[in-house]
Length: 221
Image (cartoon, rainbow, N blue to C red; front, side):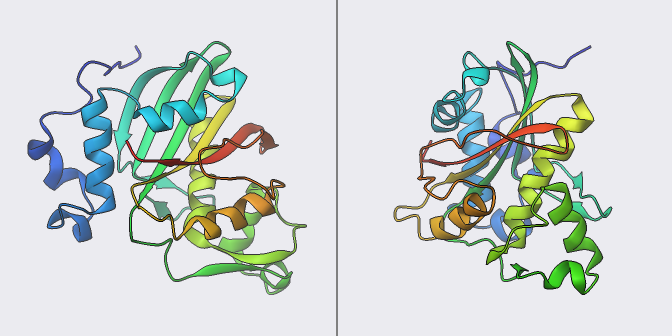
């Protein structure tokens, strides 16, 4: 039986906060994870800007949210753990779709980036090499990309495979006024074949590891 939590996704936000938020956000009312939690809870569904973004794809028109899991623990292809801010399981006209959302405000995508100069595969860096292979980027050469962005795109693919979905979206949900980390996200878009992807625009689909993956940057609630 499919669990549907459209009317009340979460208990009252203050009741669930201590269980759902990362330690860095628990005492910070403006932390990105807290803002993400509030956006999904207040929307009683998919936040309007995220919905507007994903519905740009014909396959996602009329999307219906079935369930959302906040700070869901996921496994990457090398077996290590990864925790996106929100995972939404959706009903599409063509079956199921998965949205993986990562919230950002002032915080960036972490200090570590993966080089795309051929060194990862040739040096035998197992974890990064597996990630790059899953995303279909083994032949790409270009600027380094933050590991967190690669992990979230990987999460979207792996969770779609887990649920038997053919469609997946990875969305950066930004609450920042100036979007200072957009350039890092656009490096991922460039690697995936979309050099002119702007915020508020959903990418075309790229089929990788059997999943039709799109990415995009949504701003606000």
